[in-house]
Length: 193
Image (cartoon, rainbow, N blue to C red; front, side, top):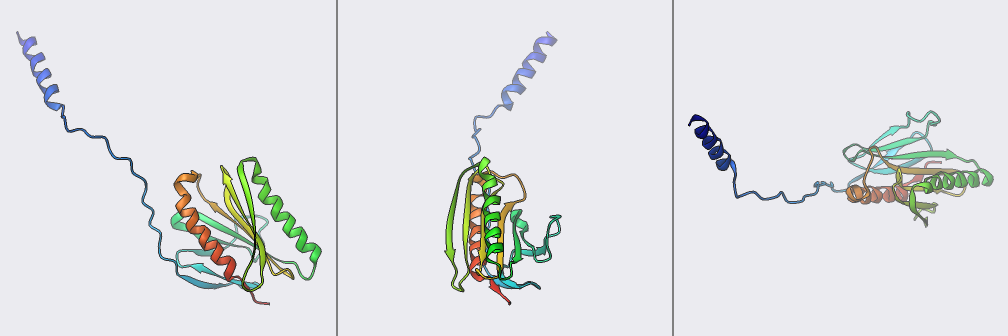
């Protein structure tokens, strides 16, 4: 008799543990807070200056062994992204300027192994600088690169990287937000000499 009573008790406990009010959780996405854009001028000790947003930090590039004194990283800590800027003074050498432009293009197209598509868009800024913006689509390490020059002696190349492995769908709002900052930087670059 005792075994039968134990079985009834276990069965009663099991039945009382079940609830009919179970509902699956709603599918949700991470909420990304994007701050209002306010820019300040960052003056380099080199031959150029530009505007950065208040949520970015500019640091000299010390991670790259080949880094030169006028190379900077614009870090976006809350988005784990970095815009790498490389500046070159090409003097008055059209040949050296063409070499820099060709090097930039080569660096971009190294990503064609993983990129589904690479688009190029030429631009001219209000202060006379020219360049090309490259957008890379697909499973690439960088989605946005550009170069900018005054066509005389100054040349800057830049590449936006996320510091973690990303999924295009999940970081697209942040990418668009940071791309707007890069485009603002392009328009705000001025040469000191």
